[in-house]
Length: 491
Image (cartoon, rainbow, N blue to C red; front, side):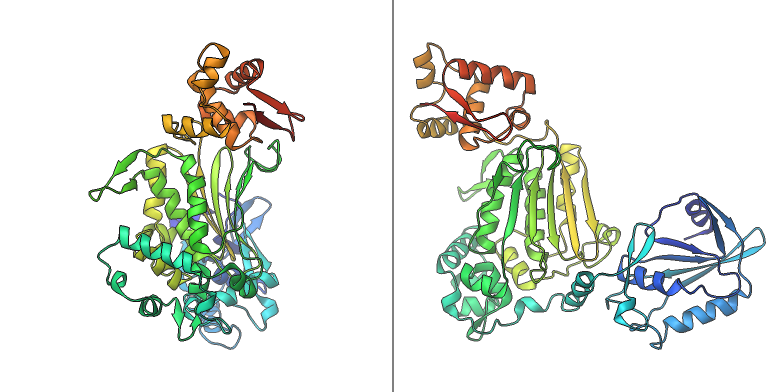
C-alpha cells in the first residue's frame, strides 16, 4: 500500500481489510483484537496515527514511531501473547510532516489465532472486530485438519457399507469418459485401495461419503444431505410458494451429483453434440461453469459442520453455498488456482471421472459464465461458509430443450401427444408456447406465472393469456387459490 492508496482509503468509511487507530504515544489496547480478526479472516492493514472524527479522518501522527513499531512486532513475533507467530509487513509514511505507521497482518494458516486465551478469538465483520462464536472457532479448528480427514478410516465400517450399484455406475462412467486410466483394468479390491475408497478393512471418510450406503453415512454424518431448492422469485419473501421443487434425499455424493446436475441443466443452453466415440457430450460454457461450481461444492464442503450444502435456484440467480471457507482469500484464488481441496479423496474421484481439473478451484471455468451470459459471478468467503452466485436473467435461462421427443414424452404422460392429438380434439393444433406451458406444468404443477414466463421465454401477460386459452379449451384446471394452489393437466 503506497501513500496514494493510503490517502484514498481515508476517503472511505467502511472497510473489511483496513483499520485506523490514533495511537499517538502507545499501542491502543484494542489493537490485539484487530490483529486476531485480520489473522482469522482475509488479512488487513492496521494504520497508527490516524484519528477518526465522525465520518472524517485526520492525520495526527505518532510519537516515537521506532519504539511503537518495535513493541508491536516484538509481541507478534513471539509466542508470549498470541498462540501463533506473525510477521507483519511494516511501512512508514510522512504526511504533512507527521509520521504514520502501517502494519499488514496476513491471513494465518494456523487458525484460530487468539491472544491470552481461546475467549479472545476475533473475526472481521464489515469494518469491525467481533468475538468469534463457538461454531466459528470449531470451523477454524476443523480447518487445521484441512486435506487430512477424507483419507482416514471410518471405524466400524466394512465393505458391506459400500453401495455396489454406485461403485458399478462410477466405474462404468470412468471407463467411458477416461478410458486411458490404469484404474479401469484393476480388480475391485485394488481399485478401492488405490483410490483410497478403503483403508484396510474400513471405508475412508471420503470413500464413505462418495459411494457408501446412506444408512452408514448417516451413522457418521447425522442428517447427511445436499439440499437443492427451486424458489419462484428473487427471494423467499417474494415467492408465491416457498419452493416449487426440492430434491429428494440421495444415497451418497455420486448420486447427489447426477440428481442435482439434471436440475441445473434446465438453467442453460445445452446443444446436443457427439464426441469421436459416438457418446453424447455436454458441451456448453454455461453448463461447464455451473457444473464446476457443483463439483467444487461437493469437493470442498466441511461435512463435519452442522450446516448443510445448498444449491438454490432463484428467478435471478443460482447459489452454491457450502459449509467450510475457501483456504485462501478470494482475491488470491482468483489470481492463481490453489490446488488445496478440503477432501482430497473426493476430489480425486471426481477428477478421475473427468468432472474436475487437477488444479485449483476452477474459478477460470466458473468465470466463463460472465463472458457468455454477460451476467455476474460473485464469490463470498467467511469463516465457515463459502458462497458462489451466478446471476441469471430471462435471456440467459432456457430451462427446457423443447424437442419433438420431449413433447411426445410429456404428451404420453397425460394420455395423448401434446399439440397433435390434443389439437385434433379441439379442432386446431396448439401453439409452440402452449405446448411448452403444458410440458412445464405437467412436470411442475406448482409453478407460478413469472417462472413460466422465464422458461417459455415470453412475458407474464402472454403467459396469462395462454393459460386462459388452455383453460377455455378444458385442457388445464386451476386447483386451489393463486397462491398455494396448483395446475392440473386434463386428458
